[in-house]
Length: 65
Image 1 (cartoon, rainbow, N blue to C red):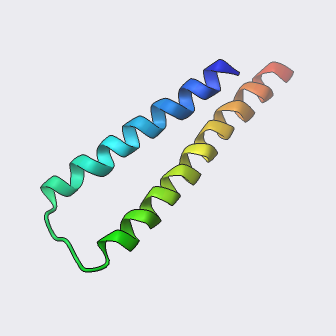
Image 2: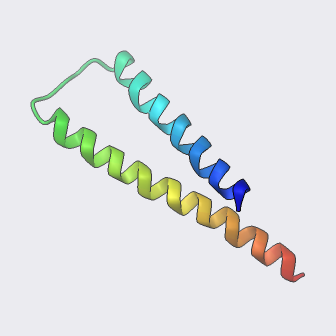
């Protein structure tokens, strides 16, 4: 289980670093930047959870063979 927690945390760190670094290169802020930021952050959390679950399912299927 520690492996999947590590994958989850590592994926979150990488995505949030990209989330804060990429806007420095694309400097077009709109008036709805807060809404977009919250939307992206929630989608990132959902995607990270799905990626971690996919790793778990892959390992579970490998164990059955």
